[in-house]
Image 1 (cartoon, rainbow, N blue to C red):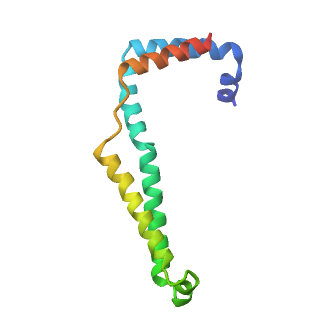
Image 2 (cartoon, rainbow, N blue to C red; image 1 turned 90 degrees about the horizontal axis):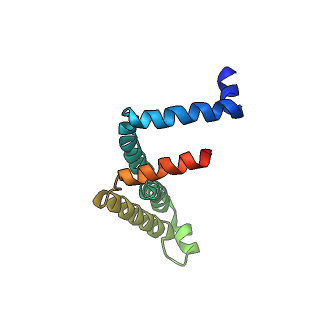
Amino acid sequence: MAQRRRPTGAGSTGATKAGPATGGAEHGGGGDDPQASASAARLFDVRRMIGGLFLVYGIIVTIAGLVDGKSASDKAQGIDINIWAGLGMLALGVFFLAWLLLSPTEPPSTDDQEVMREAERRSKH
């Protein structure tokens, strides 16, 4: 309970956030930020999410197309639509993941981090 009250108090929030934010960057605390920021940027890259989802859905739809009977093909005028849609999804997923591997996300430069710190500092005042 004491931890929840502390962030919601208007007086204590400004005093505790202002001190460590500036002190941490000066005393080497900012050294971990670029590594954490770079790994977070790589982990949450939208190409990884889209590529992974298309791969998973492509596998599911392709398997569904392979186990469909003749009636499913007849409904689509003789085209195995689940197989073609699944293969298209697989191709798109592979494209996004190959794009991610061939041009990885660049870590943010120190200038960007300084700008973000300045923006945070100004938003507190």
